[in-house]
Image (cartoon, rainbow, N blue to C red; front, side, top):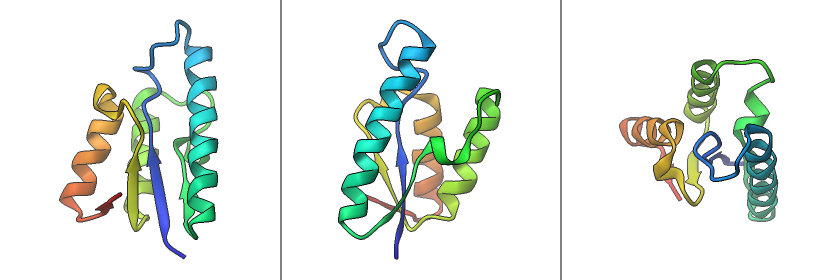
Length: 100
């Protein structure tokens, strides 16, 4: 089964509080994960590889590590506004990870 990393903006989201940003991002991650499961992929989201209390840098590091273990990556709407997503895009391109 192919693994897909779902890259999505969290800190750059328009919701006013970080709690609301995370809630909306989790909702989007859950929806996209279900779409990919139906397509036969094993979805990995940032929420699968990070824990509360991690710094932004630690979260980005955990996401990059997970991304490098995936076969492909999907970038959710608004990824361009997120530093973490832009780093994930660069890493995926440098490591020839399929972008879907």
